Image (cartoon, rainbow, N blue to C red):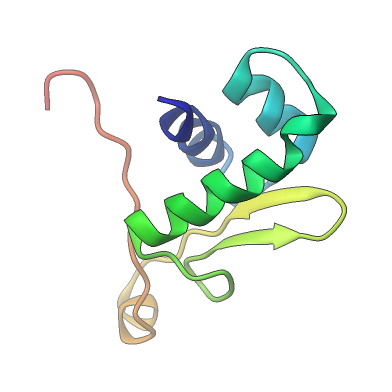
Length: 93
């Protein structure tokens, strides 16, 4: 599952910008510049499936020319703004 691998890398690096090349390499197992459009498509699918916006306190946002960043907001202020908590599951759950 490619989208799971992309999400896994983003979750492990919440709040940090992950370069396109690293996401492609982690997702596909090798770097191929031609996969950049496919990456955008898969990130779009992840946003829809997880209900994450492109901007805001809990967003999967694009950093133009660099990569993607999964913001993580928690607490009452985040809940008031409609933030979605994304928590990875561990084995056995």
